[in-house]
Image (cartoon, rainbow, N blue to C red; front, top):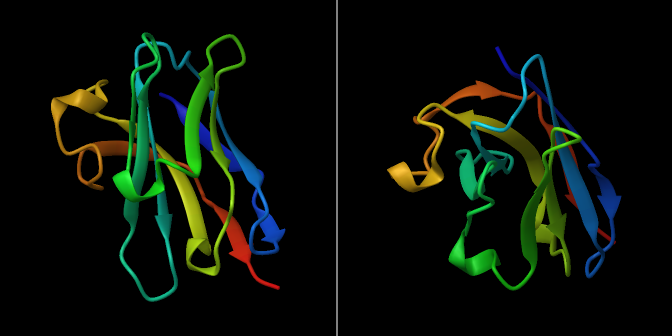
Length: 128
């Protein structure tokens, strides 16, 4: 069973950057697909991005493509979310999760349903 732990959140001013990390433990992340989600106060959890660990194929919410980048380091069992030019509306709790079908491309990577393992989340606050 894979356990996921997020880190890297914090308070940042508008226009700033953060890099979130998702560390996998228990088993290698290699066969899996890992997604990033966020949840703003009072809103539903939103899919941001997904990456197929073995081949590196990535998927990103269209509205975030210019500012966010997902990547992985297989040896370190890490998945990263680089966030640039942050805005107050990026504020929320960010989660990483394992896709149950092991492929983002199997469909609906942006929805909560296909994911079966979740981290505890890391808070990102964008404010001046």
